[in-house]
Each structure stands twice: as C-alpha cells, then as structure tokens.
Length: 252
Image 1 (tube, rainbow, N blue to C red):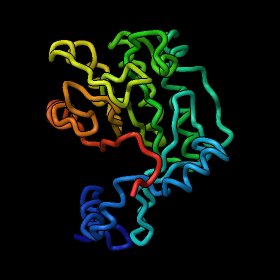
Image 2 (image 1 turned 30 degrees about the horizontal axis):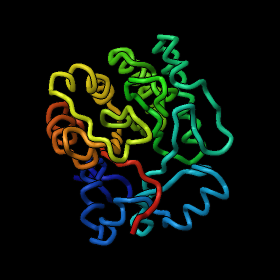
Image 3 (image 1 turned 45 degrees about the vertical axis):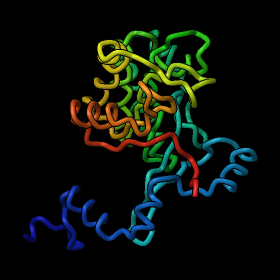
Image 4 (image 1 turned 135 degrees about the vertical axis):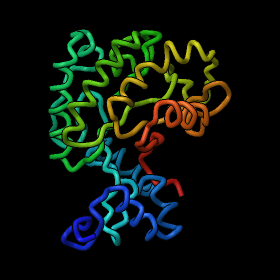
C-alpha cells in the first residue's frame, strides 16, 4: 500500500488523484470550473485596454485544493502571451510539407508557453480551407485532410513535450461571419471521408483537448452535439481528454 502513495500520503495514480480531488469539490466549485475564471465585464475592459491574451486565461482553478486550472494561450502563429516568437502562419508552414519541421515549431511553442505560465496551447487549428476569403484561411494548413492531419499531429507532438495541446474547431468550421448561426448539413460519408479524418489523426496522436466549433452540424450545435462529441469522438475514437468550448470569461 505504501508503494502506491507519494511522500505526502496521496495516491500516485493520476486517475485516482483526480477522482479524489473531484470528490472534494463542492457543487458550486464543480459548476464554476465549467467556464473561465475572469468575470465578463472586468475581462472585457482588460482586453480592450491591454490587448487579447496578454497573460494566460485561467479556467477551473480551485486554490483551496491546490488546483491551478487550465491556463490558456492562443495560437496558431505561436504563443500570444508576453514576448514570444511569432512563427509564419500555419498556411505558410503547411506549404513546406515538412512534418519534422512542424514538430520542431511545436516544440518551441510548447517551451515558450510553459515559460510564459501557460499549460494549454489552443493553436492546433485544422479546419479545412473551403474558400480563400474565409476569415481563418491563414490559420490552417490547407484543404487536404491527410496533409492537414499529418501537420497537425506533428505540431501536437512538439507542443505536448511541454504543455497540453488543443485541436480546433470540431467540426466543419469553415465560415467566419455566420459561424454563430450556420447549420452545416452533410452526409455521413462526407463527414467521415472529408471533414473528420484529420481530427481523428490528431486525436490518435494523443492530443489532450478538443475545442468544439460555434456552428451547428446537421441541426445540433457542435458544443452539445452528441453524435460528434460522444458517439464519434469518445465512442469511435476513444478520446480520453477533455472537450472545451471557445471560452475566455465567466458568464454567470
């Protein structure tokens, strides 16, 4: 029994420790960790006066239990916090067709994220480019699922030597102005052969987190889409990490 405990008398097993901490959370704390820790209006004032993501955005911290929470930094051109390296955009890096180089970029991003106090890099953007006027055209690697998947997997490998990586936006996010209201209709065949293979590739690489998209798919918002988040992501692909929506502030 002693061999299963650390010097502080706590379980060494990560899952057991997580279950222990979860059992110690109050109901209010469990609800609170579902959104960002910064209140909306103070956070909005800070963003407009100081800038976006000048320090890691924190969510789910519970100081009384020593839980530091998720410390978010955005991407994909590198860490947005502090004085960090600005790499070429993902579209330009994708044009190299060089996963080894992209893994080195990921390693550098992971090191800088950790040095800047973040523990999650949310810059593995792999939505397929369907039109050059898309507002995030420069944030992804291209339009081919195989190419995008391999480059995203390489970035994930590099980043996760140091911090958690988050792949986004799951799924079928390829329009900007209408992303809060568009309902993307697609068949199962097109979903499986075009819009999901690159996400599956990165999930099987071991990415820690998946960010859901704003849009709907086949009549259901991605953030509550049972087919995408439960049947496919967790059921078919066996994803063990956590799913997050695009977040910054506490909304209640």
